[in-house]
Length: 174
Image (cartoon, rainbow, N blue to C red; front, side, top):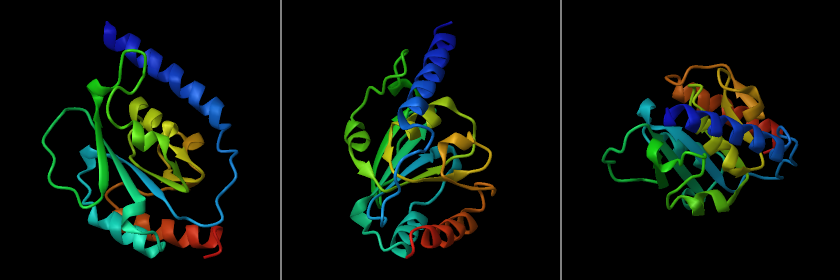
């Protein structure tokens, strides 16, 4: 029964966050200097692809932050990038993030890469809580979440990142 209330509050928080950011009505940055990646741990994506992605955009490795979301709290391998992890129980009944990831959410990011494709309200809420000026994601999630939407599957990691780089260079005149 509590799970039903938790899901309802998280949906309500998402609507509230969408209203706060004005459906991506923000000013785009002149240049991409910082990147946040909201990553669904279920996908099992190796972090090294994001290091290549950042270097292609001329973003320093230390300016890339990763937020991993997992349904269960499992042991993680060592990190190649600055990352924080959040799991289902870190979200309170009222949709508040109750963990040490607050630093992640306090930072301003020029680009938020939403690397998830399931319609999960918690992943959506985590992305909305990121202070991102421009967002890139997959086509099968809520379209209001992203400024640049690529209709690819998550297993097409290389193609997704190449296409993102191509379009981001056009958008940001890089």
